[in-house]
Amino acid sequence: MEKYTKLFALICIVCLPITMLLMNLEIATFDISFFKDKYEEYNIENVTGISEENLMLITEKLLDYLKGKRENIIIFTDVGGKIEQVFEERELLHLKDVRELFRKEHVTRNLTLLLTVVSLIYIFYKDKNRLKKILVITSSIELFLVGMLYILIYSDFYKYFTYFHKILFSNDLWLLNPKTDILIQMYPLEFFSSITYRIFALFLLENLGLLLIALLLPSRKQSNHIGV
Image (cartoon, rainbow, N blue to C red; front, side, top):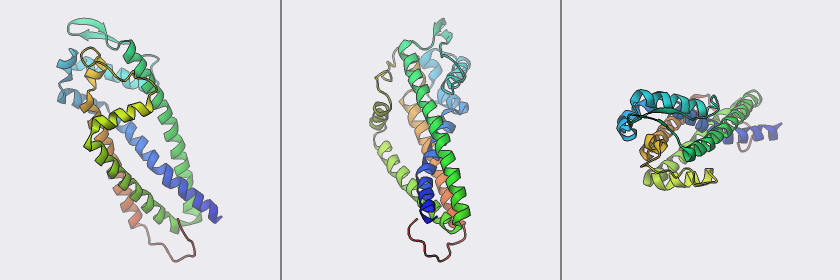
């Protein structure tokens, strides 16, 4: 049984950080109040020629599309006094790619969440003493990795933002024209840096909380177990 405990410990150490990161991604991405605040901060109404009210309506439909609740994202609205289609062909194709990424993210999150829960339950019932060590190791690794990643991104956000797109997308549809494409006018680089740092903040707070919980658990009793 010892080998199964070690296996589930490893699964937990790998899957728990992934689950937390993907959950934070969804929390940050689908918080419509965050969009409203950023539209005001970056003066998106003047940049796009779309009223704040219509920007929010577009955002609601866009988020529904990314969640798979809409078949398409073809929207018409008042742009600078004229009724126009908001997103053109290149933008629509890119948004289709983004929706597919979110679909895969959702499946991955559910899978890692299931594996994490099963692992924690197994370890809790088979070896409660090991649970504290696993949580300490997991949260410590996460804090180290998020710290290193934060330093890299903070040093040159545009560079790593570009790497991110080149890795995740097999095309260059994400390269849009800020003079003509409303999608990039609505979501400039500053928007993505803000949402990225927000995800970092959530992840950091959660891991500090996880580490605190782990440290407050009863100390491990002496045993013959070696390793995790």
